Amino acid sequence: MDDTQSALEPQLEVLDLLSVDTVLSTTRSVRRKLDLSRPVEPEVLYECINLATQAPMGLGGESWRFLVVTDRARKEKIAAIYKGMIMSLIEDRGVDIKPTQHALIERLPDMPALIFVCIIGTPPGAEVSSQIGFYGSILPTAWSLMLALRSRNLGATWTSVLASQQAKIGEILEVPEGVVQTVMFPVAYTKGAKLKPAARQDARELTYWNTWGNSES
Image (cartoon, rainbow, N blue to C red; front, side):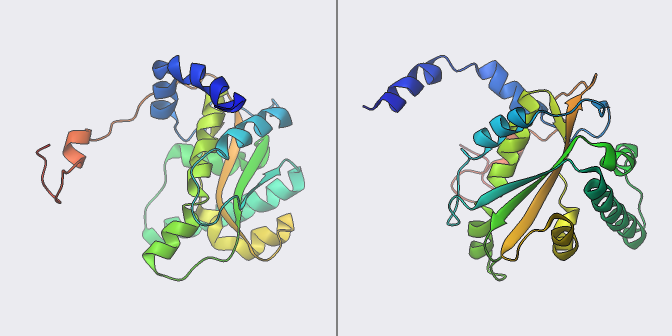
């Protein structure tokens, strides 16, 4: 048994399930009740990213990269593209979005940080297994990052609409070819936000045993 393993074991024995379960069940997209005047410290983001990269990875290996945007001019350009995409979706689908989503559109340039979760590599073809293998190396990391942010009272919103604008965002942020932008998180400290579990179907309604549709365990 090496020193690393022996150092981890006591932590596992005293794992605080209540704290873990709280983070897992209350990590929500936070678009309002954010402190836009408070900077997010780089060291805190490094801590969160270090935790995120402990997530399971697929065939892509450690191909993740994180691009943190704090420059106002770049955030404004990104926000303009984001707003245009959302407005197009509203027009195409004939539906409006939540007031909180409207708030995010207007506040995006004021967010202390925008975090782009990227992966080095070329997206595969349409084959399901290839898609799962490729994005399975990055999306668990993105979710772990959101959890780590939540545990430090940082609000974030899972956004993926900009993934369709690889070239435009890539030009603004000088992203080289061969790097795919996936999720973007607007990040700020929460300010009076009360996060709680969402209403979801019970596991017994969603889980089958041995064959599809069989609810008997």
